Each structure stands twice: as C-alpha cells, then as structure tokens.
Length: 200
Ligand SMILES: C[S@@+](CC[C@H](N)C(=O)[O-])C[C@H]1O[C@@H](n2cnc3c(N)ncnc32)[C@H](O)[C@@H]1O
Image 1 (cartoon, rainbow, N blue to C red):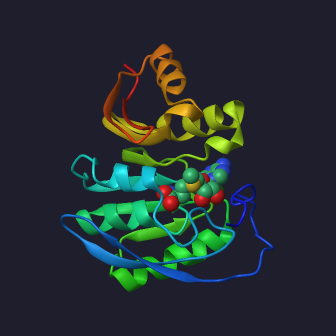
Image 2 (image 1 turned 90 degrees about the vertical axis):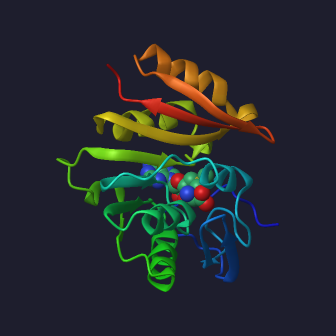
C-alpha cells in the first residue's frame, strides 16, 4: 500500500504504475486508469462509490468536480448528462492527465480538465460535486469549499462525501452556520453524503 499523504502534490515524484479499474453502476459501466501518486490507486474509493450511487439528477450547464483525481465523479456526471459541461479540477497534474485520458476513453467529451485557477471566474455552477481533500486540514478544506460552494447558482446543490471520523458532521454544522441548508442524504460505512444548498 502506497502512502496517500502526498496524493495532492502538483507533480507526484513516485514512479508511475498504472492500474485499470472498472466502475459499474446501475446505469453505466466504464474503465478508468489509476496510478500511484493519485488518490485511490487501483480501486474506487468507498466514499466515491457511495456518492455515485446517491447523486441527484445531473443538471445541464456548468458543473464542477472539485478534486477530480482520476475522474470517477466527473466522468459519471458527464455521461449522465451530455448537456452538462463538467469542469474536472485538481491541483495534481498526474490526476488531471489521467482524468483527461479516462474521459476520452469513456466517451465523455463534455469533461474539461483544469487546474483550479484556470476555471473562468465568472462561471456560476448548476451543481458542485466533491469527495474533498479533507487531509488538507480544516482551514484548507474550509477555504476550498467556500471558494467553490460560494459559486453555485441560487437553486443549486453541492453534493459532498466525507468520512464521519474525518469530520463530516462538524463540516455539515459549519456549513449550516454559514446559512446553507445541509441535508445528510446517505450514511453508510462511516461515510456521509451531504447535499449543501446555496446560502439564502
Ligand atoms: C479525496 S480525493 C478525491 C479524488 C476523486 N474525486 C475520487 O473520488 O477518486 C481529493 C482530490 O482533491 C485534490 N485536491 C487537493 N487540493 C486541492 C485543491 N486545492 N483544489 C482542487 N483539488 C484539490 C487531490 O489532489 C485529490 O485528487
């Protein structure tokens, strides 16, 4: 097992060792290449899988997967609604390369991979999706979520999956304190799926 500590460095130095996995959902099945130095090498993360099985219908228009890794969420969302443009954002360039190749192979032509600063500032999102990098620490995580959830359209929802023991409930409380309606829509295996509505 390779340490996950540095999966969010911009350019992982750990040697590449690609492994292909298959994602099978009720409505979709596609392959994804994974690699060392990118979150969830060789497997689909339990929380990501739970999120994919819980997602509400994908709206058309601009949507974003914050911290896309090798692209499981971005590609699922893109395939579910070809009228969505899915921004797949990550700081890890190995992840972005994998995500772009995986999207092409899956036929998800509506995925746009980008580093965070490359997303045009004027976009307001019809949906935000994330298995967020909680290992950034509380301050970094809060800053990240404020940045992207702060850019959702008035009726839009951000769907997040977070481990309970990594602070899902306190995160939900923090978001509620900022004026967001937060619903815990699923709880399984120590993970929570949260739907965060735009602040009123
Ligand atoms: C828990 S992983 C989820 C990866 C992928 N979405 C999945 O479900 O397999 C979080 C991802 O966030 C990325 N990340 C870390 N800091 C970030 C930041 N400031 N902006 C965007 N993504 C970031 C990491 O590189 C990592 O790929």
